[in-house]
Image (cartoon, rainbow, N blue to C red; front, top):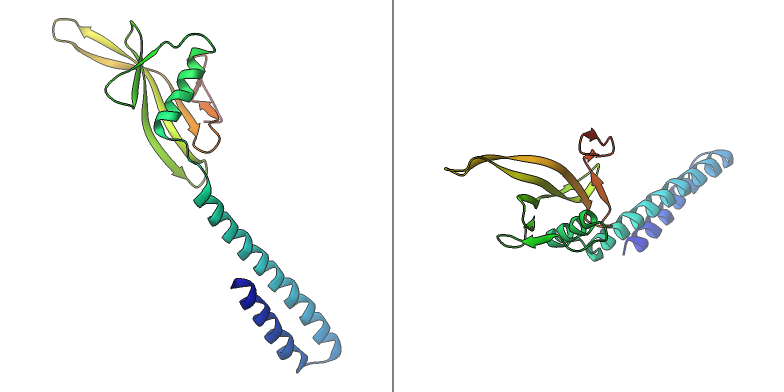
Length: 162
């Protein structure tokens, strides 16, 4: 349909241009118009293709993003993590270290990604169970590719790519 409208507009522009101005002006205007219309048609086709592609692209789920971080942290060794309270939190066996799916973001700059928080629960008062969390790291997991970008390197250096 867009191609038909494009061809119809192109035909009308050529007829209008042919009826006015000198030969040089006609040639110049016709080639510029053809160039502009071709650019518009190409961009329209490209944006339509992008929309169609986005509808067919597989987005990594929150659980899959957590599994990607689990594998990353296990570093090829045995699985250290157990699920806790549903699908969005895992903890390292025999410890208070957790990884939790924090958020899914669809950002114009960084794209679609999951935010995973790695932290430890620190008990300050064993009698009351009161305490706080200590962040080990934040991870951005690309929802299209599964690429991981940690916020911190070596536990303390800020990653400029995060």
